[in-house]
Length: 147
Image (cartoon, rainbow, N blue to C red):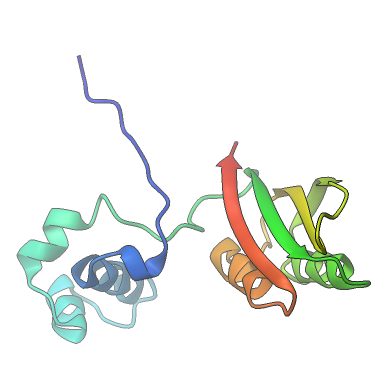
């Protein structure tokens, strides 16, 4: 029996530096900023063996996500216009909102979930989530699932 692939979503700050450098080296090669693997690994400061060891196991989260649906959960201040601001971020990133569910705010904090479909021209989802997290009044954003 073959090993079943398991995937984890981790924040950038939890990823070891060598893996981030592998991603950067792959980006340099794909963008044709460097012509060889040796030049890519030299540019980011890792060995060729590290690159080959991890190149097939690390990739940017937004790669190949077109057509995927993400469910995001939020906690945010109960302020007029804040949900509108978050929805505008999603629209500006060219994602499609499928569902919105918001509970009645408790102690001034609203909890909600959003299902968002990634389209071919959607901006990087990690950047979209980061923009939402940095929105004043948003306390917490988490990717709950991907379908």
